[in-house]
Structure formats: C-alpha cells, structure tokens
Length: 138
Image 1 (cartoon, rainbow, N blue to C red):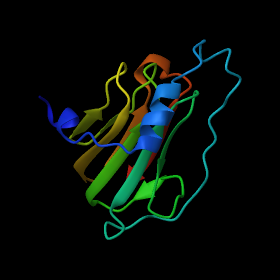
Image 2: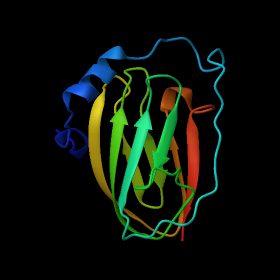
Image 3: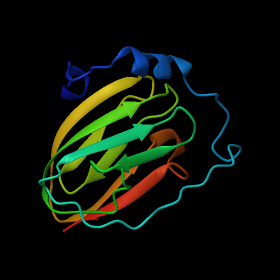
Image 4: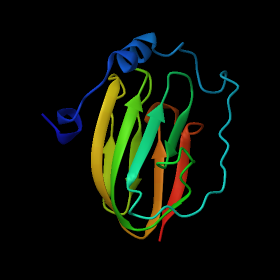
C-alpha cells in the first residue's frame, strides 16, 4: 500500500460528498474558469494546507486562514486533500514533490511535504488545462 493510501480518513459528511460524485461532462462545457487572488506569504509556522478537488470542475489549495495559496515560505507542510470526485484527482508537483490522489478514488488524504524554494503546480490530471493552480515558495 502506498503512502498516499495509508492516510485515508473521512467523516460521514466527506463520504456523503464523495458519493455525490461529479456530474460528468467535459471541462470546456462546464463554463467554469479559474480565478486567482493575491495573498500574503504564509510562513511555515502556519503549516497546514487544505487541498480540494471536485465535485464539480473546481480545484484549490488554501492556507489555514482559508485563503488561496499563492506564495509560501519554505518549510514542512501538512496538506490534507479532500478529493470529492471519482472523475478528478489532486496532483501536486514541484521541487522534490510529486504527490497525487487517484482519479478513480475519493476521500481524504494527508501528505507531509517539504517545500523548497521554487515554483509548484497543482492540477487535476484529466482536466489539466482548466483545473490547475500555481504558487511560489521562497
């Protein structure tokens, strides 16, 4: 069993959301667009991040204050991902990091990652052209 699957915990509410799944269709037909807001750099002391994908064509990475992540200080972070659709995944890549949920799976996963200075990218692999985001680590 991979590390991604070892830490798999969800409450009844998360299970209910996961079972709701995705309505299907393609990303071009969804009519959704990605928007990005500017936030202050989050320090490693606020080291918990929340990733989310689905149930629609939405993907996000937020800091402990619920703000979109655009810049982080280098350090070790705990990332909890809520994968709410068996049509999507959450895939994070960057300097020494390559973590992802399974496209066909749903539920909660928790990763501990060390983010070094550089650029990072997260995306839904099947819908990477429209479901993605980037942030920098300094």
